[in-house]
Length: 300
Image (tube, rainbow, N blue to C red):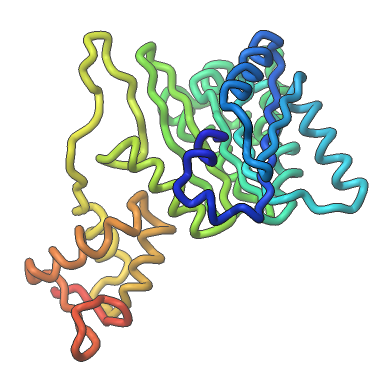
């Protein structure tokens, strides 16, 4: 995250913005290593500060939020990457407390395989209730396999989405060679943030924008083909708008919010090819080829 800022081509425009990095790590060896890594970056810009706190995330970050709340202050705009050791040290209530502040967003590492495996196991009740912020996870006990996995993921996404500043929840799958299923779950409060999250997902998975699979032991890529098939997006648009007129802006909104596709997949890769194929009628403003403020409808 720090390198992402320091190497960003637009950083010079943000000289009047203060960037504060707070890293919380409970393993002393990793604390030392992290300090060495940061020191190796050399002198940081005056508007960039780094704080490395040894300790448990729940206690350290929870104390910070409590102090802010008790003083009646508002937390600075925050992007929190929550990467717990297992799931027993991550609570929906603490995440929810962060997300009561405006302009705060999260990316949560969810070890879904382990949650799936330990549902119903004795002694896990408190940890699972804390993770989900409710006891609805108990409904997964009677399920097996993919239905259990899907239920638990959807429940986690639903609970994250109930927080007042969260407008969008999106998940990205990480599949490892040993078969474990991990998820990165975004809780985002702005359309622009959703666009950036989708851009990141599609950069890693240029085929579907939903998953990354580790390479096999022979080095062969499990994923990816080089091109994007936007036929599913076209089908989704047809199902949404039918034979009714709609605007390019409405199509963009639908693509952003209701599909896995990026807005960048819409015009050149989906709408214009559909027009050339005689599947879509486009009424443009006089004297322009732009789709801005145009009217579109699918042909029967």
